[in-house]
Length: 407
Image 1 (tube, one colour):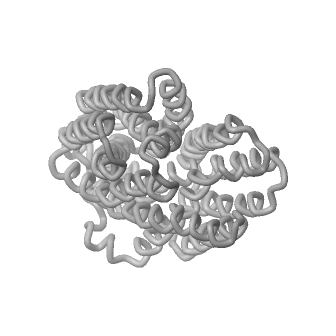
Image 2 (spheres, rainbow, N blue to C red):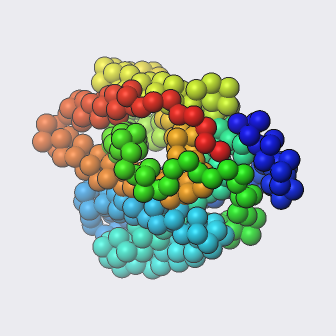
């Protein structure tokens, strides 16, 4: 690849100027903007648990109807990720990020004035869903397009914003709710998120001109067997991931943990995921991305054996740490894998299509797990359901061939 790039640079001065921009300080500015965008969007999205109880109490709503606000949010960002990535590929990421900033800010501000929970399905779910879709897929494509040699490390750093947002978002929201109330907290977070995303939009730029064309176009990618396997993998992985995010605190509380200790598990999950994103992203620059991705998938499946057999808070901590590291690495390596497999010329669109599987997983994960818990009176079968999903998600990665870099 380096020889091909060197020959291209020698033949074309414009290509040489573009090459000088890859892996530069300017490139890392794009990675920093992606980090902040994901910190803001996911920090708010994953803080919904802090709003769950006060909203349910004010509106007299049950668990199912209240949790639907979060499920719809995930579904919206999963489905709209493809559209956001496609628009970013055509018109650049700045326009998409501005639209996401306005939608998220307006949605959260409007949520602070709702009088019925169902209205939150329109204001919160759609507003936050658009914000996450705009701040995730397009920014991953931006980072992937600004790096050649350090792409995996840069992508790991960018998606670490999700983990950091998870660590900060929920505790910050809970503290603000206790002091100000949930409506005032939503209002303040909406304004803050909009300002942060607008700042990211001002900083972000299109990637440099790519020196070689993508080896496969989007239609070919979607029709390829490996793409289908990766799509199935992402949908099943999302089922396994969102079940503990929703139910792990309640599970821990039922086993005797305090409310604070139970809620801390979600924060620990986010913290461990940061470690996985950064470390495994860096290692992938020196090892096979596919093999590391498969290893992360295997560890996610194995972690559920610990949860299935858990009998103490210490084991819950072990499960959370192992799941967090492996899930963080999986999320960091997935876009790098797609870049290697299908090229970066239409990376935003390819990532967006893959991540619609996350929306499917969000609808099939927590709701079905909740139904299982309600009918059996136990978490065990719901955990087993998640473990089977994780195991199949790992299994479908095995037939995928190791890609050759195409850029």
